[in-house]
Image 1 (tube, rainbow, N blue to C red):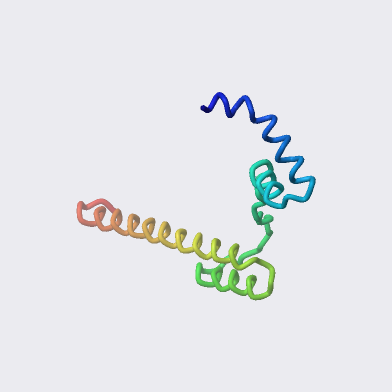
Image 2: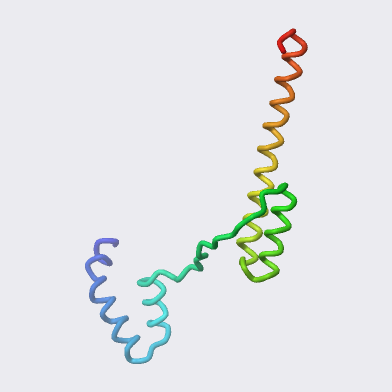
Length: 110
């Protein structure tokens, strides 16, 4: 069955194209949906200077950039989420540093 259809594809396409050119909207839609990939929204890179302060201050700067129209809301949300992940990483680093310091004191290492 697949072979029979595969052999008829050029003729089927030509028929659909002819029908589309004659005004058949369904044929035109089918051809366009299958032959041309849909456009996808693309976000352009946006340079942004964040303050060197705390993560909270950087988060506020991101929200202000969204409010000022410098960043799209989706970009702002993604960057806020990235700051949240960075905060978690920083927290783990801090806990590791503290644990190593405590273990050093406990075992007599300065």
